[in-house]
Amino acid sequence: MAPGREGELDRDFRVLMSLAHGFMVSQVPRRGSYTNSALSSTFLVSGSPQSQRCMLLYLAGTTYGCWAHLAAGVREGRNQYSRAVGISAEDPFSAIYRSEPERLLFMRGLQETWSLCGGRVLTAFDLSRFRVICDLGGGSGALAQEAARLYPGSSVCVFDLPDVIAAARTHFLSPGARPSVRFVAGDFFRSRLPRADLFILARVLHDWADGACVELLGRLHRACRPGGALLLVEAVLAKGGAGPLRSLLLSLNMMLQAEGWERQASDYRNLATRAGFPRLQLRRPGGPYHAMLARRGPRPGIITGVGSNTTGTGSFVTGIRRDVPGARSDAAGTGSGTGNTGSGIMLQGETLESEVSAPQAGSDVGGAGNEPRSGTLKQGDWK
Image (cartoon, rainbow, N blue to C red; front, side):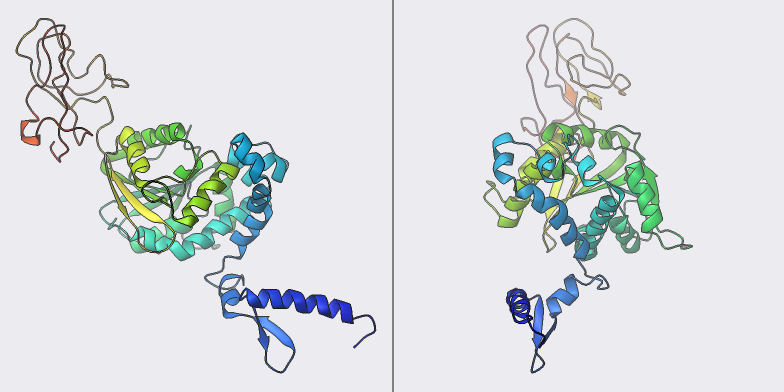
C-alpha cells in the first residue's frame, strides 16, 4: 500500500458500504473489490433496456435543485427554477429545455420511463378501433412507437414543440430506418392541432392549472373526430387526496417545477366533462400510473335536438340558444318552438344532473314566455 493511501481507502470503503447498503453495489467475496449489484446493472447502466440513468441524472441536475428550495416554494406557491438553475420561468419547459443537452437529457429520461410503463398504460384499454392516434407532447416518440407496435392498424403521430421534434428526428430515429410514427411540430396551446381519433396525454395535465387544462382539452375536442377519445395517463390521487404517498410527492414536485398538481379521478372527470368529454373510465394497469379513457361528447353549447314549448310567444333561434356560453353559430338545429326563453334543448351525450329519463329526451323541458324553467337530461347513451 502506498504511503498516505490509508485515509483515501477508508473514505472509499465508507462510500462503497453505503452504496452496498442501498443495493447499488456488491462486494466480491475474498477479493476486496466491488461490482454493480443486479439492481444497479438493471437500472443505472446505460446499455440496459430498463435503464433509468438519464432520468436520474435529470432529477439530480434539475428536480433536486428545486426541492432544495421547498420552503420558498410553499411560501410563494410557484416554481423554484430561478433559485435552482438561475432561470425565471413562467413556462416551466423553458427551464427544463434551457439548453440542448438539458433538453436531450429530459427527453431520454422520459423515453426510459415509457420503456418500463408504456405498454401497460397503452393496453389498459383496447385502442385498436382508433385509426388515427396522436401523442400530444410525445417528446422522443417512445410512447408513440410503442402504440404503433401494439396497434399496427393505426396511424400514429407525435405532436410537440419545434425544437423537441427536431431533436427527436436527429437523436432518436435510427438513420435510414423508416419511422413507425410521424412527427408534427407545434405548440398545443397555439398551433393548429392535427385531426385524430385518439389523443394521448401522458403526464401532461399535471403540469398545468385547471384553466389551462380546460383550454387545452377544449382545443382537443375541436380536433378530435366524432366517436373519438382522450387517453390520459397520470398518477391519480386516492379519493379525498390522502394518498398514495408517491402521488402526493409528485404533486408537491409539481408545485416546485410546474404550474399544476396531481389530481383525484373526480377532478380529471370534471375537467374532461367541462371540455366536452363526459364519459371517463379509469383503470390502473399496474405500475405508477393510471390510465383514463374519456370519450368525446358534444362541445358544450352545441344543440343537437330541439323540442317545443306549449305556450308563450316569440321566436326560437334555430340551431342555437342565445344564452348558451360558447355556443357555435354554425350548430345544426332541427325543429322549432315558441316562447322566447324556453329551454327545450338536448345535448348529445351525458349531462351531470338527472331529471328527465333518456326515453323522454325528445320532449320539451322548457318554460313558457318570460318565466323560464330549466330541465336537464339523465345520463345515458341517447343520441
